[in-house]
Length: 135
Image (cartoon, rainbow, N blue to C red; front, side, top):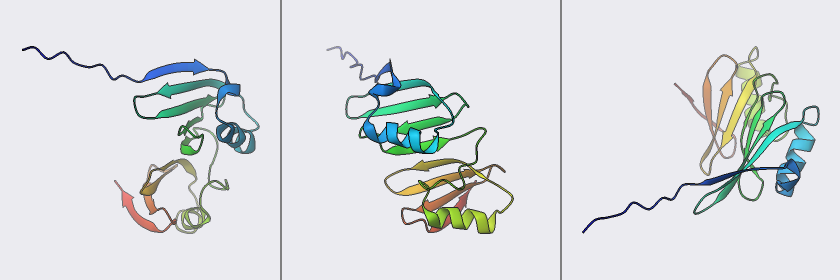
């Protein structure tokens, strides 16, 4: 008997920014109003749908199927003062690494991971409590 592999590849589709979920559009408008969306992709998998947005300044944003942010990365702009990052994380980074900026944040179901301009990666729990430096 021969087994045939099932292809469960995600289906990526380039979409117009207007087709993003409302939450995603609101997020981009609120926090990145000074740049334009250069590419939006709908990634429809077997189980869930996700969205990726590339901005004209090189920033990359990832959203879940409901349009809630999962990951934000900016090559040019500091994310340190942005209100979508929990206050406890912003305070910790400002106090302990005052000369470095947050350039990337990733939110999972268990934790936040933050990358600073000096390359350090910090981990926090979902309440913004510092856990460790990730090497």
